[in-house]
Length: 386
Image (cartoon, rainbow, N blue to C red; front, side):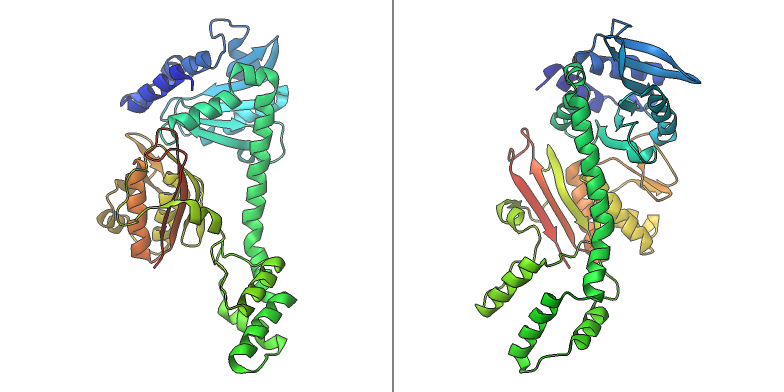
């Protein structure tokens, strides 16, 4: 591991004055040291070129190799909302034919592929948050996506493309899974109907008409939940065979992970330092792979169900308030006009479980301990259902 980067990131995490620094201090105290430890010669202005002129403006830094622009880097102060500045940066990079662009406030680093299709936000393929992610994860991604060697070899761009395509694929899957489930219920597959009829006949001696089964399924699932596991044809055949032998299939789509993961007691959450989330769900909603987003999904669910900020504060050990706030460790809750203060993984999960119990929502988190975690490279599982 890059020890100098590790020391730098530890210092950043523990610096209580970070949220008060301006752009110049962010550049000199955070960004340039990171670039230096990633192999860039920050003292050579032909390689790390400040105030690079582009049509209609300037970019804070152009990272260049053999006089070719490889990366455009735009820096804002640590308290700045980066989303307000992504369009300009990506536009400049697109106009100049630069394949990689990075927007950062020193703490959050947003990576873009300017030459891809889609909106400015859709071209963002990865985000590193030095306060939220483990140091090991952050270093790994920085070295792959921004080290000079990786950029020069083309590996950075190829890795970026893979991350972008994976993100696009997951987005398409998330959008279409509910539609596929709806189609299965509204137009039941022949094998699903046969399986249900076979089981029905064994129980009561009669078979139902296809129309009866269709109407039953449509009535059973008037509101289709996202993430409900859908049986594929081969799974249906396997379940049919299992029914005949008197056996029952596992219901969870995560059976293999569930069996190998170390199960934590939702009533006694601890030892979540140095972990990364693999998969998380709160109720019927899927969270992005972070502890922070899991709780935010829960908070959005609570607000949509009518809980007030005051009621949430009474329920949880959490500093949350109305309005958009980005200082003193606060960050806005996406999609809501309120903000909450940062918490570590243990406190975040404790609050998420409390919220799930109060709302009677299932909560499922599959995660992995990193090298410095309590159980290195071991998967863990926290699962509670009403």
